Image 1 (tube, rainbow, N blue to C red):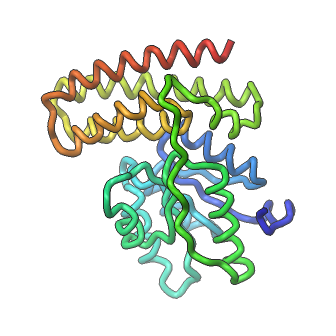
Image 2 (image 1 turned 180 degrees about the horizontal axis):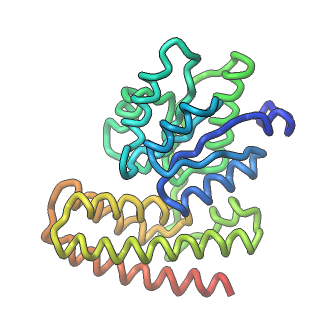
Length: 261
């Protein structure tokens, strides 16, 4: 259990830095479930500005964002905090390639959580860093790997854990996901047709993260494949993969709309 009373939790200042609206809703809902509110920043630049104007106890930092990514934002924050107490920064990342943990630490982050983030892993991080901040008893541990998601259209178990079974919150998150995903898919198809590898990688990464957060494994896996194609600039199969991704999303959309009824 987290070693803070509700009154203490209300005085804790958290900053969530995340460009995905879906992931913002999910992470903030998980924090609320644990008794904590948070401020939001949509990219690294907003995060740097927020940290400059507000004293936070802990920052959750997405790594890949437009304008300024989490690595650059963290380096900037570290450069500016000379002589000040160190602000704990925990990466929230869907990066899975070898060396990603080291890259986070080299940028100045204190730990990282792999997306999709479990409630238990988030609880452990809050307990560890807030206790370290307020009691001086913190220890550094690397959180475990994310839970595997069943290979089906969508496993709503995780989403219902986050929402506490509240159908209104569940509807809100699903509707936000569908809206963002449809816009992302349209732009992703355009990037694939134009051979824009950088844009393809960015869009696929965003879709991969939000799909993982709601348990949509087939869509997540196809988005990850497209992200890799963009990163490696292997664009020849990307258009075909984007068509497969859209077909998987149509099945997912039908499933989710049915779940809302």
